[in-house]
Amino acid sequence: MAGILLSGCNGKMGRAVTLSVAETEGCEITVGVDVFDEARYGYPVFASPSLVTDEIIRKTDVIIDFSNPAALAGLLEFAVANSIPAVISTTGLNDAQINLIKTAATKIPVFFSANMSLGVNLVCELAKKAAKVLGDSFDIEIVEMHHNQKIDAPSGTALMIADSIKEELDDDIKYEYNRHSKREKRTKKEIGIHAVRGGTITGEHEVIFAGHDEIIKISHSARSKELFATGAINAAKFICGKPAGLYNMADMLK
Image 1 (spheres, helix red, strand yellow):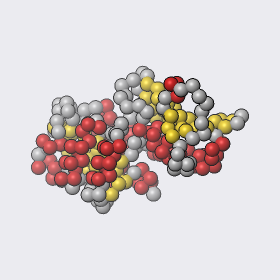
Image 2: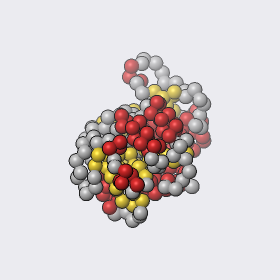
Image 3: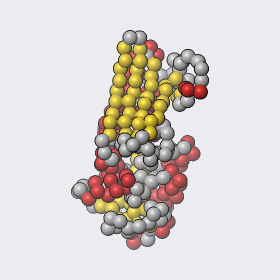
């Protein structure tokens, strides 16, 4: 039975993970960490990982993080100090925080993905293949839509898709987030990324390849948070027992 420390347990994704774990064999949540440290789901909750007791730490095999970027440094420090593998699912991380993840991965196994959905990761592979086939003869735009409570924009998933495409294109490709501020033609050396926020949209991503007299679209629509929770739980089960290193969805799907 894999014991899980759930960081961000009282948020929307934390609740989704809690409900999914309850229906999953082979794992249980031993402790939650959340700045709002109310115990809502039958397991103890602490405001910081540093407050978790030694007795609970001994029962914890893996961390799932769906919290806030500001909590990342302390969580990774705790994971490394206690040799606990970590699944990092929080989005909106900056370069310095991503470097913290890479550093931690030299000491413990870390699973890091901007999106835990199998379908989204398939979209990345399809978009990458399309970019390879179409080359620079098609303009590429990415449109993402999320609920009105999402803080970061563009989404980590949109950037993950763009990064996948860029692997097949020239290194000098730039991401264009703010075209409305310019009065000039679109160049071939850019990928447009557009964010829409409204209502209760769980997550929509569309990749548009616009060529001469034809348009190709690859899209993904998330209908609930459950699929992200399931992906994170599968990642947690996958990473337990692995050697130190940085893992992602492609490793799990091999």
